[in-house]
Image (cartoon, rainbow, N blue to C red; front, side):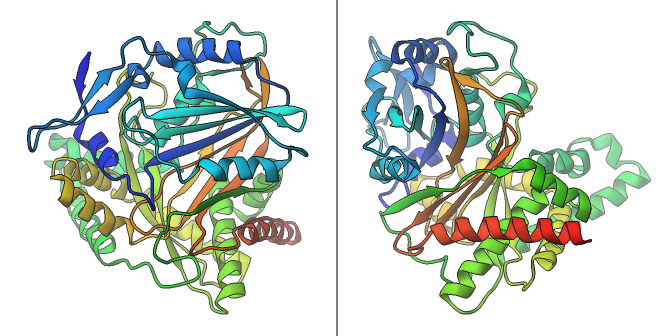
Length: 456
């Protein structure tokens, strides 16, 4: 079967380059070993049977200006995309990070389906699954749902069992799904419901939208990523690091006592981590912009069989230039609230689709133009509330990183799962040589906010 690749998916197919691969990296750790045969059966029934693109490869046309297409791989065997490894002793997080970093800068071959998974034994008494999935298959939000659809609430579920899906358990790789819901609730109606615009209140909404749109266009055009210790020219060498999980109860307590949200606290902690790194490295602090993916698919509906990319981006400037944790939290809330009542996500969704209808060279120029306004991509995923199991093994942690574009150098993953917050960074080593300092500073900022909340 041949199927034309959607113009938006083609953007990410064309954006691969040695210093920023368009590969979404995902990691699950488990408290016990994973049975390889059972894992392959889950892979076939939950992934390949549902989403044919995992058995297809991209083929470019020899005709100029023609779109590429997906082509079935004859007699496709998914076991060729599942590689087995054993970590060297002591099999700790450092050993697992070394394994991930051995592959994180390696392109996926273009002559086969654009994904691979590593089954890793010897992670303490347990195991890990490291997945590398190309952005051309789908956006990270959808791919996280795909990976979570391979998991079960109970360890004894049959590999082929098709239980009702829970949107919360499928998660959402884009941060702050509520952002696009809020945007759709305000700007969406003004954009799409023409009868509403004919009423006096509709005319007022239209003028408000026009003013907002002008402001967003100015923001997207003129925002600059200032020179700092976390910005630079992206090189080939990347490194992923993560730390021990943070109890979600601590974050909830800090949010509750300060009148903010869990998302506000986590993003403020990231601002504090960046602020600490800048102060330690540069001796000065300043605000640093980051890109935030936003979901535009209904999470209560199944994913389409063809998957594909349907996401938006918002440009959020971390208040890392402020001096105190409380000031950073207050400003994070103010900026987040402004985005929630803005049509920015809807407008950038349209912008992405428009870029997908330009030529390859113009695509690259436009993507780089907007990507270089941010230090990287930040994702904050509200994952499953309770434990999940993969091929019978209980999952202990989940992480995933979106790819960077242009000269982006700092990728942040915040993933909430089973009562804990898991934080990891994917950095460009030519720019950020000591990412472990970011991890320590993130935890310190959470502790400081919790202490302030308790004192208050």
